[in-house]
Image (cartoon, rainbow, N blue to C red; front, top):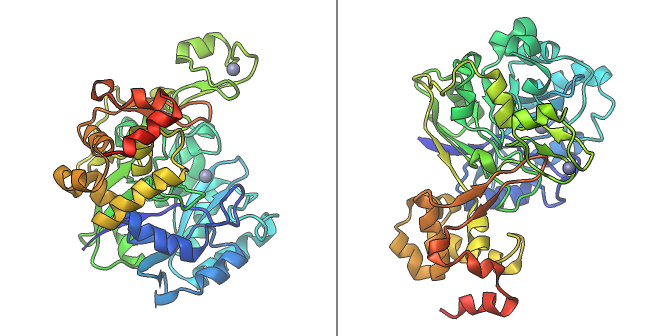
Length: 409
Ligand SMILES: [Zn+2]
Ligand SMILES: [Zn+2]
């Protein structure tokens, strides 16, 4: 069977997360995005674990609520500020791991994503002891990521580098970026949302599609390890330019710089604040090859733009977090079942029957790769613009009454 899975989220017990990040809401929102399996995130946190335990038990490592399956996961920050993702086979594996790191963490019970006073090698070794999968989270971002502080997998994980089976690409990178680095060729690429809110613009904005025999931890583990016929068959995610750290840019005024300019300016913006190295430039430095070379096992990568963002632009709203956008999004989801269906699978003529012409035209533009992306950087997400010749971009600049007139169709 084929499943879609988002394997990195944070609960309301992590910093700066929505209080709507509870198991029930996540279980109800996931299928609307088209997702069958979610990773719980934050599973070392006792209160979150209590909530996970309200799910139905499918097997030792798989839980279910409202038809959505969950597997046990967490992210930890190591002593060099590198983030690691872990996937556990059972509650007892989580408990055992927790016991071992207890003395190395001060915020295990207060932050869903704890800091641990250990390096990558030690974390990977403890993960191996309990049969958990481990790998770097959002590996290329300029803060809190493996390649921000290390030059290689071996530099981060030492003798345990061979035990690492996956790398999470993060929102600002895709397979083309990752596969310019030779040491990553043997790893499975994961594309996850890392969301802090269940809003459809965030949840499952990136996901993995796996070929498995069942939607369980064991089967997903085999897919990540690519054994017994299980495997990833698609990575789906934002165009890298949409990520917050795609280009090198100032963390205060968000002025973008080329790598050469940033170096010449000694990473100091004209406003006086720091320029943060973008993922694109970091990968440029790390790359073994000028052009990506994909290993045979690498599945295709499809670039997705959240439907709510497409709607936002199409109807001239300023953010996707408005009632108007929500109403338009709901209308499409109730007609076609899930966001993935609307974005990719449903005949555009069917979509036209249900929604405003500006929205179906925008979906069409997305499908034909005609959406213009203005790259993110310095901590600010990239933005999208619709092709102007359709005459819809201009509406986003118009006065309020002009916007509402869009609905008189
Ligand atoms: Zn992280
Ligand atoms: Zn600046």
